[in-house]
Figure: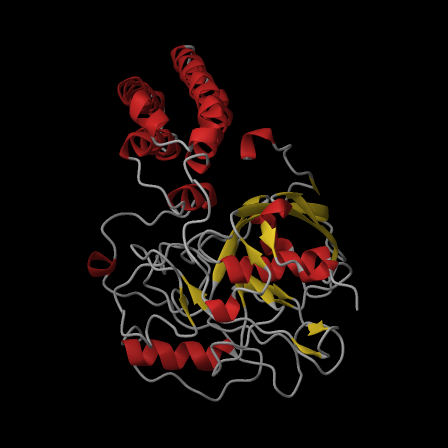
Length: 421
């Protein structure tokens, strides 16, 4: 998938990045409409019930919330290691596959990112160990990796593994030449090969969507879109194209709903409606309705809350993990990356999401996976994988010029945009 895709453009003048220590704010009121929701009220009540915030916060806030103190639970209880916050890695681990051999190649390649954070020449020494570990894993596990491929994609998989082996040799030479700047681009290329091999291990769609939702637009697989945003009144940024990967393997209803709206050009020309350092949000159309009005019914189209928990074979629908009593369950698509994409909904109605979407901007070490107040309560369905840092530069009033499908439209079942009327 990604290996064949051209990198998106971003016409941005260099500017200092905002401080990485953003304080989490559980709020996202999309508009001033009478029924617009306020996440702050929802988040505080959830946090209080879960015991994640000590002390009694003041509940007399305005519609647009003010910052809260960081939520700092006992991380040793909630996670067993540093949270994964790279969107590409999150998407790779979210694939419905079980092939240890390919994961043993993937992990040391991902570890190169941490190796490069080491000061001085020791960084390249650590990278060299990562490369040797990945090369050894590929050599020892090649047959097991090939056995895990869907039969129709085996030839493509063999070609990709050959490219991966050559690329690892090239990376080894880069390290031997002490060319530190060339490491990260080559790492990205190799991980694209790994990700494509892993996607080729998925043979068909892994579960049946419940009958009551089976006629909705469904993304049975993955799709990639480019969102072009026109920046207004910002001397540091002109136009940016954000690449977004939508994950229908874990959120087919949610991702399908969004992709269907993209093909309807629903978001084209729409302004960014909230940007407060915690989230960037859009999707609230003009007029009294707070979502997409389906022309075939004349009513707002809504979708159920859809959450895939780690270890489950299919998502749960219509209830939060907390409501189901699954307090320790991890989500397959966690709110753990800068640019995590999810559906906004009414605070008290799990099944009220329609067209309003948001991207999370936060530092995952402060609220790691499953330790924040959003995992399992709001439906994540994708990640921004290119230019995600520039989401922090978006302001209310900036315009989404277009969202265009790059790949994966053939995975969309029951597309309503093709229905006339």
